[in-house]
Length: 185
Image 1 (cartoon, rainbow, N blue to C red):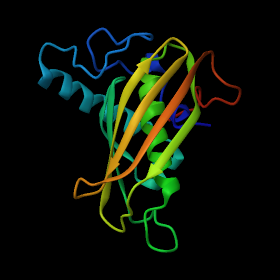
Image 2 (cartoon, helix red, strand yellow):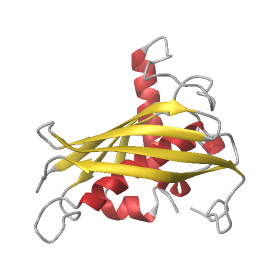
Image 3 (tube, rainbow, N blue to C red):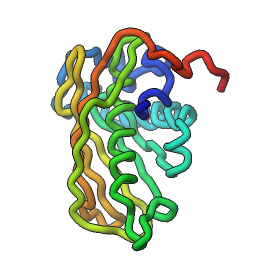
Image 4 (tube, rainbow, N blue to C red):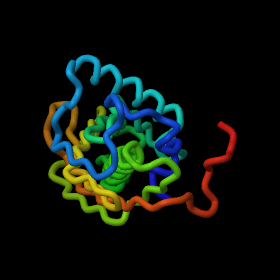
């Protein structure tokens, strides 16, 4: 199960860009909205909707989205509670944060009734951090009908890069067996 399984279906959450991004469109990071403030406010509202539907792992790890659109997502995660025995942020926690953002972004742009699953992720851990909060920014580098790829940069409170990751998700029609789609909130 990926983080995408924890968010509502793409048709339950309106994309932050007016009219939606549409699968297969590659925006290259540009803002299609005429007014950046309007798009920014919509991305914040969408992040709040996604946070309300967080899955178990996002809740346990304290992952909170602050901005969400199919092209760009931003989230924070506390270091405390996500450390390994030596007191450092666990590398696996960084990978969970990265996959959460990419999976949510892919879900936001997938056709209604689709399932998004992560099929490949890699991560390079550049420096350790022992306290504070890390911030992740996921940028879609390629959007397609069946595959979507994101670059994710994670930084510490001082803005230093702690981890870079790349996630590729597959978009499939239909819901997987055992989907939480019909469960009450």
